[in-house]
Length: 186
Image 1: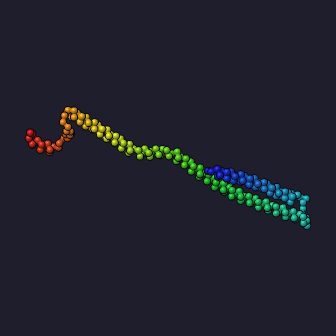
Image 2: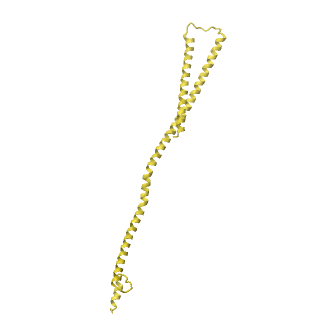
């Protein structure tokens, strides 16, 4: 949630609180006026309206009715505003909740990323390690064979005085040995 959203919520909350206080004050004034009117009209037994009301009383009564109607309209207006603000606050709270949930989910994903990367890296490195190990074994085997051939070559050159190189003798297949043994040795 951004700082502007937070400040908007706080501003709306303050405004709603102020509107509720104004509405309560208006309600109290309306209640007091209605009680005063009720007391004047119904509560006073000595008060009996005359058939011929003075024009000034009618004007005052009309003024009070207009004021009462204006106050009722203001109360209705403020109630509509409060309802609209309450709806907006509800929607903002839902939005805040959704954003909070999403933020938590993203934090969890971010925390899991290193483990996921390590696991994927290990999965990709396993065949490479196997290949390196195989190449190292093959390299050691070839080096051992090279040393063996070098050693034999050194022995042959030390033992023989001629310049020719003796090649290693390989075992002959059985069919060749039979044909060779048939030929008499000279």
